Amino acid sequence: ILSTNIAETSVTIDDVVYVIDTGRIKEKSYDPYSNVSTLQSSWISKASAKQREGRAGRCQPGVCYHLYSKLKAVSLADFQVPEIKRMPIEELCLQVKMLDRTAR
Image (cartoon, rainbow, N blue to C red):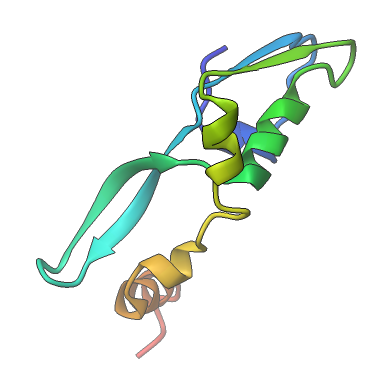
């Protein structure tokens, strides 16, 4: 099974015994100088690494292989920066407005 970071928290896949963690994530980010939103590849957080590790062995013993050094693991941020802090608020407001067609 090849998965995105959505499988870190919201999905339990039975019979997963091995997890191979690349330590990378694609996050939406905003560059205010160019006024462009892009998907950037970056390192995961310690919390994400722990979630990924927890996917192995949910229903039976399992192993997680991290494809990065222990030195890198120690240097990871504790948590990811929430998207609301990485993106301009205008984009969120427009998305919410699109949900409610009666909003003005």
